[in-house]
Image 1 (cartoon, rainbow, N blue to C red):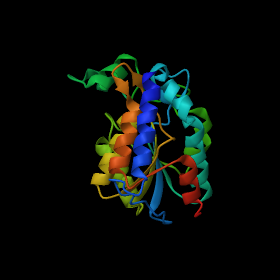
Image 2 (cartoon, one colour; image 1 turned 90 degrees about the horizontal axis):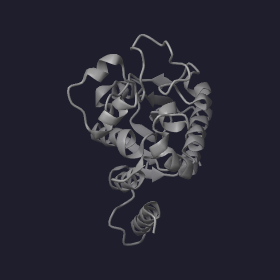
Image 3 (cartoon, helix red, strand yellow; image 1 turned 90 degrees about the vertical axis):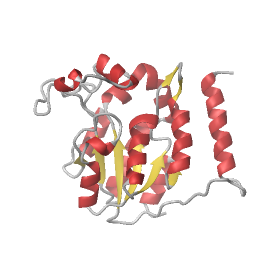
Length: 245
């Protein structure tokens, strides 16, 4: 049996167990409240989500299997249509970041393949359409003058950017979380936001992850989403919640 198929079976088994009468884990849920709830999207960028992106070879199958690109757009539309503020936490690397003296496994890979590379923090030469740029179909939502784009996170979590500050300054304490990639930036954002006292609902099919010899990142993330988040929603569940249904 294919490793990905076995991973999916394991996920479905966990989900079924978690929703049974005798589930070991409760389902706290999260109630959306106008003025206190925001959509946060991590790394909606070409290098993850475009077939031309440098990471497509390892994340592409997961992105396609989850309809991740379409689902993220559905969330953008739902948030914008229901006065839910949107925050984007991007990933950029500048030339000085390539001078780091040590790196974790994925950091080393991202730097090697030029993932999210920009000329500099104040230099947008070559940025348009690059791997660090937004996926084109998301630009109308992100560049509408009403979306908060934070400073870049540098490894995986928002500890290195101003996302938490921006959320707090807008009175947000509930987050609908989506974006790339599931077991890295998305999970790291979930963990830090939970530690910072936010309620977090993760949208499980509006993310995806690498499938490599060492393991299926998406399967790993789903388990941790269920263990840690206040809620784990599908895109349609998140859309209905934003619509007040």
